[in-house]
Each structure stands twice: as structure tokens, then as C-alpha cells.
Length: 224
Length: 248
Image (cartoon, chains in turn cyan, brown):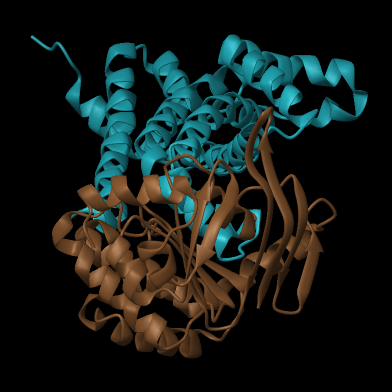
């Protein structure tokens, strides 16, 4: 009785591994861009910079309030229709744009909360010795906010890695797209997707270990 | 030298400081006493621009500003001339004792690293915490944290150090070591303005004691006069109450 075709599964591993780098690139680039955007949003929200603050609120509301898949389709099919110069936008670019904006909206809120959570008296102390707002953000507030925000940010990163699988709907052959193609050729859908699932899982597990390590490092200053 | 002229601070309708005039000489030790909520802390915070004063002019060293016309640059410059010691220490939690003291030299005064850390180590020696150079605030006692807080203020080479109830948050066992350090600074003629309820410190160390009530300077003079021959009934009343619980 063969429930699973193990031979096929083992053979599939090296085939699918070739598409893992693209998955990681989508998530990696998306995460870096989302972090930058989220930090900017958070600072705009904390300092309540006029106009930008209102725009940021609307942006966050939209990208948190609509499904990622809808956003990806908007970028991929919608933008070229709107601006003809963007007809060259490919699936990979659209995916990165979608992931960046979607996750920056979530991350902005957790970064904002972490910034607000840094003891107000330290801000005063930094001002009292003559630091500028930029210096006190960079040297005192953000390093401490990072520690608070890290677990949630890592969660979003993990979520983003899995969300890259939606890119296959835009015709991108990343891990999910490749699995779909392989399975369609062999009709061994169950086997193929188990292999893909395990690959996502292993990547996420490695990240969780990294998270533990980073948390340990960042907490060093705060343990008695 | 520090000079305040008609310095006022209002929070909306509430008048916290009403037209304060005050001149402090270089090397003078001034202790400010008075009931809670009468503007003592606000006065110090205004001098450091942690609060924006409502009106008046301030002079610290060779810089005079009209508080309403002060530019961002002048505010920064004012803060750099005045160092602040906080009631709750307010050390940077992500930095070691050494880094807390060196921070201002590195970032604000832009000293080279080596010079800044050398100076910070000297200060750690002075405040008796050379062995805590690499300790983070979370691992230090309240007394040690406040001494680092004072060390951070000393690093500035400021015209004046403003102490805002520096021992009020401390467990009684740590009060003496902090007061001891302040006395040491006083003996080196570091200009100081101290808001405190430690009456024996005021009596022994101050050149001048200022009694503030209702946002005004009610009475001021050398400690011998204020403590033993107060003139204003409010001063008498305050001293009677505080000396009953906090004998000199």
C-alpha cells in the first residue's frame, strides 16, 4: 500500500530548492522596504507631522483593511491600466510592492507603539543634554523600541515569507508556483505540496531560532 | 552667571511661575525649598527649556534669550549650558554607565571617541563607580544610578547643574551617597541649583536658600537667616511643618 510516493518526494526536493532563493528574495526585499516605510510612518505618526500624518492614517487604513491578494491584483493589473508607463511592471515587482505596502501598514503600528512605550523621562534626559530630535530618536529611542518591537516584527516577517506564495497568482514561479507546476505534471499533488509545506516550515523554524538569539542579545542590557 | 528676569510660566489659566527675578553667581550653591506644586521643579525645567517659559528673559554665561523669541539653535545652546539631574535618574537604559556619561561628549560636543571615554572614565572615578563602567542601569542600585545621573551632568562642563529633587526617589539607604557626591561638587564650587526637601543639606551646603510659594520667590537669604530667622509667615509655617518630619 503506497499512501505517499516517497521516492518522488525526495526527487522533488532539489527541484523545488532551486526556487527557494526567489521566495526568500521576495520576502527579504519586501521586509527591508517595509521596515523603512514603517519606520517613516511611525515617526510621522508619533511626531504628528501635519498632512503627512493624515495621509499615513489613510494609507495604513487601506492596506490593513483590504486583502493582500486584492492589493497584488491592483498593482499587477490595475496600475498598468492607470499609467501606461507601468505596463512593464512584472509579477515580481508587483509582489514586492504589494508585500511592502501591506506589511508596512501593520508594522508601522507596532513600531509606533514601541516608540511611545520608551520611558518619556529618557527623552527629556536626551533633550536636557542638548541632543536634537533626530539624535535622540536614533541613539536612545529607536534602539529601545527595536527590542520591544522585535517579536512582532519577526512575526510579520514570517507571515510575509508565507505570503510570497501568493505571487504565483501573478505568474511568478517561486516555491509555490514551481510546486504547482510540478504537481500538475505528475498528478502527485499531495506529495508535492507536502514537500513545499516542509520547506516553508524549515525556513520559518530557522528564523524563529534567529529571533531567539536576537532577543537574547537585545535583552542583555535589561537583565539584572 | 545665571540671570532670570521676569520669568513666567503659565499652563493655560494656571500660573505656575509669576515673574521670577533671580541672579546667581558663578560657583554659588542655591537650594530652592517650598511646598509641593509651587513651581520649584518648573523653574529648573524652564531654565533647561524642558518647559517653554511663557515670558521673560534668561541669561546663562554669555547667552541671553528672550524666551518667546528663542530660536531652535538658542534653545539647544541653552540646554548645553545647563545640565539636569532628574528625580527618577532617567538614565539611558540601552547604554552602560560609561556610555551614559560619554553620550553627550560624543554626540553633542562631537569629541573623538577616545577622548570622550577617557573623560567619562575620569568622571566615573570621581563619582566612585569606576568598577561599574560596563554595567547597565537595570543592574545598578538607585543610589548608583543617581550618581551616574550626576556624572552625566558633570560631563557637560555646564555653567550650572540643575538638581530636581535628586534624592526623593531613593531608598533611605542610598540618600547619603548621593548627597555626599553633591557636597563634593559643591566644595569644588560647581554652580548648582538644587530643589530638595533635604533640609540638612540646604543648611550645611547652600550659600543661599530660596523659599518659593505660589510661583513666587517669597524669601531668600543665607541658610542661617532662612532657617533660624525666617521673616515671612509662610516660610515660618513651611519650615515648622517640614522640620517636624525632617529634622535638621
